[in-house]
Every structure is written in structure tokens, then in C-alpha cells.
Length: 284
Image (cartoon, rainbow, N blue to C red; front, side):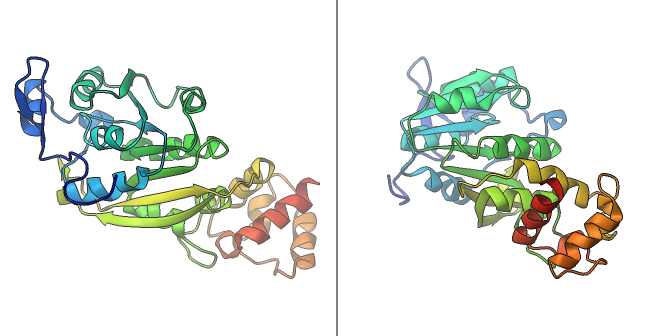
């Protein structure tokens, strides 16, 4: 389906409940007595523009695994675009509500951090993807789970705190660059879809959000990732000092010199290619 105003039934539209009566989204939320749970980091997206920007990225996919559907704000336009949507939510209220608002989607009560995402993804036809308005309080662990599935998905469309998104996008030389930047940029080509202001959510968070589109590159690097994480242990220290917990300083310094790098280089200054050359030389 295209992205015109008429394609997809977004937030302001209505659905028919089990009794056949038409229900608006507000009525749907009120019917289930839903209130966002701060403990679970729930901020429900209410901007039709943002919803469309995210769900447009599902065009062409056969299946989607959605993490944290809430009351089904994204789930419904996703199921209208793809053949299959499986959604995981730890909140029983959301599972029931999303199942009504997004009829046809499989909404499962599960803790996404402990669930095997691969089981659900491999049960879908290709191409398939992961979509999520990620709770800010568990963004890091969820990103780790996305990285684990890089080999079995065709894309991931993720909304997160803007600060985290900027770290993911940071290039060599940018002080925002961290281990997360290097790992995700190794596994995915990353593009920014849009910025989303606090007013696009209920309740509004205190920070801006960003939507990123991740396309797997077909590369691996698991052995090197431990070196990368060790190297960023103290981002403002030299790489030699950070890696000294696992390798002799003379060894690290010698490898850096062979690579044409200074012994005083800091972790954020290395390109992705340099990181993986360094890791390869250290673990060989």
C-alpha cells in the first residue's frame, strides 16, 4: 500500500468492537481503562504523521515482529500492510487491547527481553522486519536483541530517545561515538527517518525521539565486538589504557603503530574498518 492519506487506518480512525459498534481510538483506550504505565516506560505515539513515517517502512515486507505494541497504535497499520504481524508485550492489558484494535495480528504476552525473537521471525516468510517504539528504560538491551537477529531480518525500524539515536549514527571523530555506534554500524546501514517531538506522545516524554531505519549489511563481527566494548570502557582514556585489561600495553601499542595510528589515539577516533582490523590483529 502507498502512503497517501487514504492508505492505512491510523490513529484518528475507528474500528468495530466485538459488538459491531464503531469505536474511536480514544474510545478504545477508555473502554479498556488504559493508562500508560510509567514503570514500563510507556509513551504511546499519537501523531498520525509519525505513525505513517514508521509504517511506510513496512511496505514490501511479508512479516513483522513488533516489540512493545502498547494498545496497538502501530500494530494496526502494520497488519494492514504486511501479511503477518506478531507483537510481544509484557503488559497483559496491552495484549488484550492491541488484539482488538489490530484484528489479525498475533499479540503475545511475553517479556521481550527474555523471549527468543528468532523463533517468531523464522516462522515468517521473507522479507521480514522488526518494528518498535522502544521503552527508553530498556533501549540498550532491546538494541542488543535486534543485533542478534541481524542475519535473519531484512530491516528494523526503531524509535528511541534522540540521544541514543545520535550515538548510533556517530562517525569516527565524533565524541558521541561509542561501542554501540561501532557494533550497529558494522551490522547495519543506518538512516534517520524522522525526529519525533515530545508532543507526539501521550504522555509526552521529557526528551525528543528519533526513528532509525536499519538495513542489515550481511556482515558479522562477534569476536571483535568484545574488543570494541573493552576499548570503549572509559571513552576519554586512550585505547591502549582501555585495552590493557585484556591485552599487554606493548602489544596494543605495537599493533596501533603498524596500523599507522598513534599510541595516544582514543576509541571514538577509530573508523569501523580500523576497529575490526585492530580486533583481528589482537585476537588472531
